[in-house]
Structure formats: C-alpha cells, structure tokens
Image 1: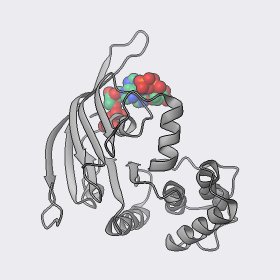
Image 2: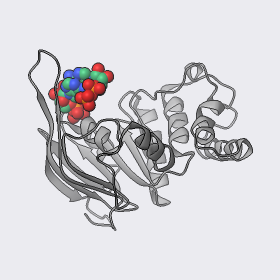
Image 3: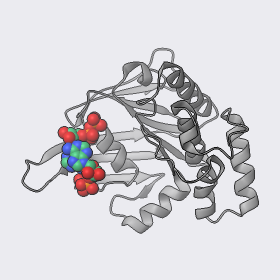
Image 4: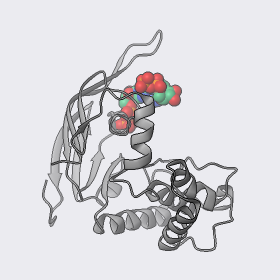
Length: 234
Ligand code: ADP
Ligand code: ADP
C-alpha cells in the first residue's frame, strides 16, 4: 500500500483578530514507496502547510492521514516526535542546522536521540558525509559552510536514521544555481536508490527533478501527473 495516504485533509490557520486562512482544503493524496513527488504551486497555495501536516509539524482540523498503513492524524506531539525520529527526515529551506554544533554533531544528533550506539552513529555520519561530498568538513561549524554545503549537511542529518519518507520544503529555495543543481542531483540519486521523497516548491525547475508533479492551488490539488518518461507513473 501507499507510504503516505491522506484523505480529505483540512487545515485552517486561525490567528487572533485575523480572518481564518483556509490553507489546505480537502486534499486526497497517495505517495507510493519509492516515488519522488513534487508539490508545486504559487506562494501561499498551502504547500508548506500540507508538508507540515504530513510530517506532523501541524495537526489537521479534519481528514485522515496514514503513514505506511498506520493512522497518525490524531497522534499527539510525543508520538509524532517518535515517529519523525524513526521514519521521517525533513529538510527545510533555511537548513535549520544547530549553529553551535559541528557538522559531525549535527548529523549524529538524530541517531543518538533515536538510541543508536555512538559508534554506529559515527559510522553512519561518516558514510553519509562522504557520499554527499563533505569529507573533511566534519569539524566545521555550519556558519563556515556555503549554503549548498549546509543543505547537504541538513540532508545527511535527515537521512541518518534511514527514514522511510524524506520531506523537503523548498530545499533549493535559498541556494544559488550551483547549489540548487547539486542538491537536486543528490535528491535524485537517493531517489534512484529507493528513497521516497515528498518535496514542496514554488519553482517549476526544482519540481522537475521529481518523477511526479502535483500542482497545488488555493489549498487543493489542481493536477497530478507523472513527468514524461517516468517509469513509475502517477
Ligand atoms: P498552527 O496554525 O498549526 O497552529 P502555528 O500557529 O503554530 O501553526 O504556526 C506555525 C508557524 O507559522 C509559526 O512559527 C507561526 O509564527 C508561523 N506563521 C504565523 N502566521 C503565518 C503566516 N501568515 N504565514 C506563514 N507562517 C505564519
Ligand atoms: P505555500 O507553502 O504554498 O507558500 P503556506 O502553506 O505557507 O503556503 O501558506 C498557505 C496560507 O496559509 C498563506 O495564506 C499563509 O499566509 C497562511 N499561513 C501559513 N501558516 C500560517 C500560520 N501558522 N498562521 C496563519 N496563517 C498561516
């Protein structure tokens, strides 16, 4: 069955003294294991909100959400934290690295929090950083790296616990064209090895790195199509 299944997900942001914002208005979505899905659409369409719902960073007002067949939409913060630690990696537009930890410590942290023995966390970290072209950067601080390098560190951190699902929120949104190409190439490479990826982006070129592109508009799916030449279909 699908790795992600959403049925009629609804999320309205309600601020004090402001009109409610209907960010996600009844979304049905299936993501199959191994798919690389991009959700694209204009700023304000509700893409980030949708990603936050799938990653448990926000709760839906109504609708159902299943991860690998397990219904999770009513999970509380503690269960979500556990689920994210074990099953979901997330990369954000602005990397969100811990600025006072080294590159190595940033990447190892989720493994240690998940109870992985320190020696295994070190080995996974070393392997991922080498794979991402960051050998020799272990002792650097995030602020000493370029944006593209920081996003690669964030990618290593997101993947260190071998998550079933990788979520990416505008992963190239603060990178120059070289950094963008590099990060998209790496996402594509992990995808080729079977990593399931759900990415949201307003940028059509970034979206075209995926093999299925969902157009999102005004809180709803407007179109859902595999790219030409896809082996997996929609
Ligand atoms: P929820 O609506 O799920 O309760 P929060 O109110 O916790 O979400 O907001 C999540 C984050 O989004 C907060 O950091 C908040 O400051 C930020 N935020 C608030 N208003 C907006 C807005 N209009 N657009 C984007 N982000 C916003
Ligand atoms: P996108 O990622 O497509 O730019 P978002 O999901 O960030 O869209 O935002 C969708 C709408 O919801 C926007 O109008 C945004 O201002 C609003 N919004 C997002 N988060 C919040 C929040 N926490 N509180 C209030 N409004 C929000």
